[in-house]
Length: 483
View 1 (tube, helix red, strand yellow):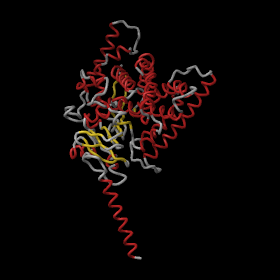
View 2 (view 1 turned 120 degrees about the horizontal axis):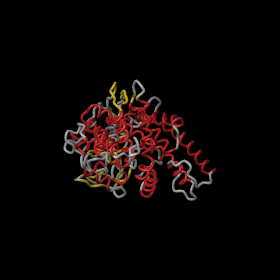
View 3 (view 1 turned 135 degrees about the vertical axis):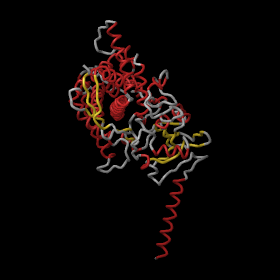
C-alpha cells in the first residue's frame, strides 16, 4: 500500500514538474523573445497589476525592458503574451491587421466590455460599426452641432463649480462629460443619466484590476457595475424601439446616436444585432467619458504645476477673444469652428497631456500565424501587447520624457493622427473614432477655463498607475471667475 502511495506521489510530482517545464518553455517553431512566463496559470499577472505611484514607466515594464530589451515574452491572466516597446514591431502590428494580427483582448477583459463589443469584431463587421459611429461623431457632426453642445456643457459646469467652496475635479469632469455623452448617444437628460452614471463609475473603479470574481474585489464591483449599466441600456433601447414603431419606423425624432442604432436593428435584414448594439453603446459611453475626464483632469494639474505653459495657453485664447472683438463678430462668447481649428498651442498641450497620461496601458492584438521579427518568432495564437507608454516615455524619442513640454509637438503631424512614436489614440485601422470628439471637448474646456476662470489647488493630485492612470485621492481645486 505504501509503495502504491509513493508511486502515486512520484507520478504527481513528475506531472507537476513537466507542467511547470512546459509552461516556462512554450513550444515554438523558432526562437521566442526573451522573458519569463512566471508561474503556471497566473503567469506574471500580479506583477503587471502592481500599483506604482510614479509618472514613469511602471516597474513591471521598466525592469523587463532593462533586462530583455524592447521585446519580451510574459504571461498575463493565463495567456502567453509578447510585450512590444519597439516602434517597428508596433507599426507592423497596426499595419498588418487582418494579415498577421487581429484585435484581441484577454478573456477577463472581454467579459468586462462584452462578447459583442467592437474590439471583438473583425473585417467587414468592424468597418461597418466604425462607419456607423463616424456618421454621428465625424467632423461634420462635430462642426454642425456637437461643438455647441460641448460649449454649453462646459460653460454651465464651470459656472456651477465657481460657486462651490471646492471641487473634486476628476469626478466633476467625469459627470460633465458623461451627461453630455449620454445625451448625444442616448438622448438622456441629466436626471435620467444619473443612475446610469453610478453604474459606470462602479464599473471604472475595477476596470484594470486582477480578474478575481469574488465579492469585495474591484473586479467583482466592475462586473456588477456593467450588469447594472446594461440593464439601463436595455430599458432605454426597448423604449426607443417602441417609440419608433409608434411613429411608423422611419422617423428620427430624437436626433441622437440611438436613432441610428434603432434604424439598423429594425431593418428587414439587420446586420446589427441587439447584443452588438448594446455592447457598442456601452463601450462608446465608457470610452467617451473615462478617457476624456482623466486627460482633462491631468491637463489642469499639469497646467497648475507649469505656470509658464498656462500663460502661453491663456495668451492664445485671449488672442482669439481680441480678434473676435476687433472684427466686430456677432457670435458673442461662442467659439466658431474656425477659432477651434486655430488653437495650435492648445493642440500641443492636449497631445503632450495624453502622451504623459498613457491612459491605455496596452493595446492588444493576437497573431494569426507565426510572425518572424528580428530573429524572433511569435507563435500563432499568442497575444501581442503594444506598449504605448514605453514609447511615449522613451528618452531617445522624447528628450526629458517626464517633463511637461507641449512645444515638443510644434509642427508635428502627430497632433492630427497617430504615428510610430505617438499612439495615445491607437493606430492603424483601429485608430480611435472618438479622438476628434475628445480633443474638441478638451480644447473648449481649456478655452473657457483659461479666459474666464482662475483656480487654486487644494489637495490630492497624486498620480498612480495600476497600470492604468488614476487619481486615488482625487484632485481638489477651487474655481472662481476672473472678473
